[in-house]
Length: 144
Image (cartoon, rainbow, N blue to C red; front, top):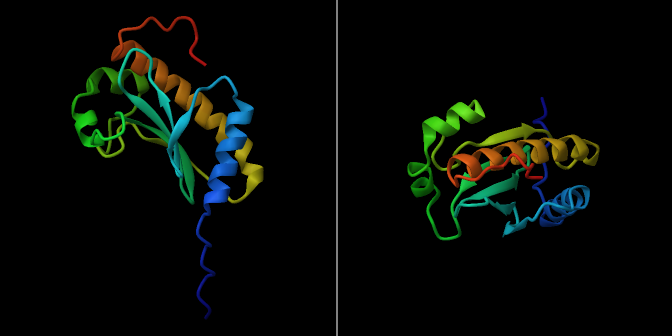
């Protein structure tokens, strides 16, 4: 019996193309470079960042602090109960707090539009919750 074919590693070019397509679809979003696997969106009224990430089997978002701040330190200082109630999910792993993901194969580009919609919707809802609860901002004017 033959072993299943190994999945080729995801390339930097694929990750860049994915995020370029996402930014083209949602040009109003202000995303900055996190690393080859992520883009960062600043949370208004806070020093928090919402990380948009890609792996070889999913895309997703999680909360982190600015570069150089350990994510576990950020997680320890979040108002977990209020955010868990608002977002409807537990804080989860403190290395990737409030991580929400969409499983699919990013190498198959026909899946990109649905995953982009997931990132946009989930990111916007999470950003609004963080801006209101942590930043004390009124987000009744929609944050895109």
